[in-house]
Length: 152
Length: 147
Image 1 (tube, each protein chain N blue to C red):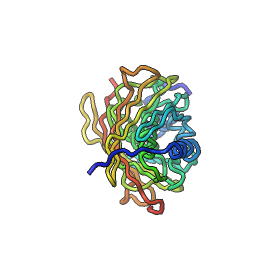
Image 2: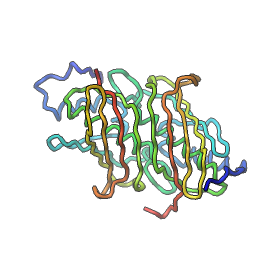
Image 3: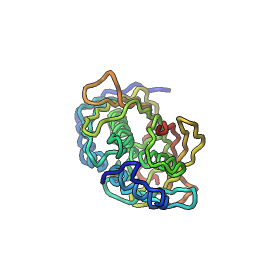
């Protein structure tokens, strides 16, 4: 049975923003930035760099970088559905790569938790290059689960 | 290091060629990937590194990193099997996460080409840490083969 996305306090959103910046080393290492956050919705950006290139011949960015950005944006969107700090894990991710991202591009990812149940959060996200909203780089459907921190 | 397919000479051992190829991929270097090979079986290795951590509270490796690791393994298996040192294009991937990836353990992954046609390949890949029978994640995806 799905629950409505609750109203989330500004304090909690601020806590999510802080965690995004301090608590996720890989996001920081890739230079991900949180552009906006509200209950169930997040927008993040990533500036592509030469060390993230996947194909040395064509110089396009590795798909894994887009995967990491989409996974992260989805995760933060879900975290902002809970008023209490809730550790989350990704259950599954499905990504369709529509277009390659150029090595100097800024990739923007937008995620929305469209359905929340007691055990699972369902998210959809899209990544596009710069402000080219009409032609996405990738689209994503994902599910996340809240967990206990002590579970291995 | 500039790499073009024409620099692979027929006299190169496949392992040497694979080392050279993987070394030319900046993102593979960023994840510090290495590989072991046994005949036609390729195992990719991702070492422990602080910049791969996702949620530092749990803690667990970043889901995107595990996905990237699996995707790279799938791409490399296509290269290894074909001995053509050109990357396919990822069309779509589905990654399923089974267990939290421990931040202080080395990760391993292997891929299997389920079907390779003229233009596309469908590949499965699995990643594990200490126990091969307890995978941390699996991927299945479709890849557009180089022309």
